[in-house]
Length: 95
Image (cartoon, rainbow, N blue to C red; front, side, top):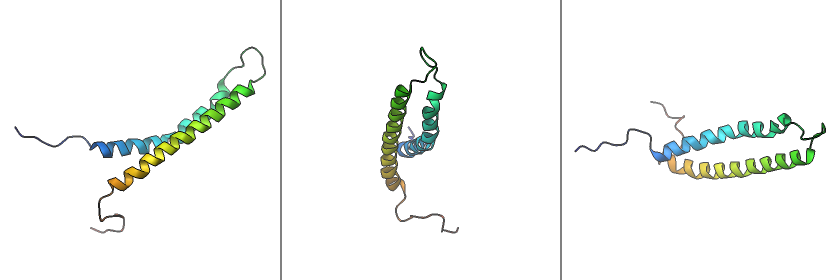
């Protein structure tokens, strides 16, 4: 039997790309979540329930900070391990 290497990307490389995608999508998701209370209808009266909206916005804000911290920590450790040894900047090299 001939054992070939994997056809797909390496797990570490694939995981780092998905983490970068998540970091890029975080501001879009945060904007949507912060603008969501505008779409809510008042429960029984025509006045807005600002207390609940304020708590919701604070919770979303805190959640975005936590998710951003987790993503930045994961991306910070992964890029150092992913870079090839001896080649820090590929842009300055000519073929």
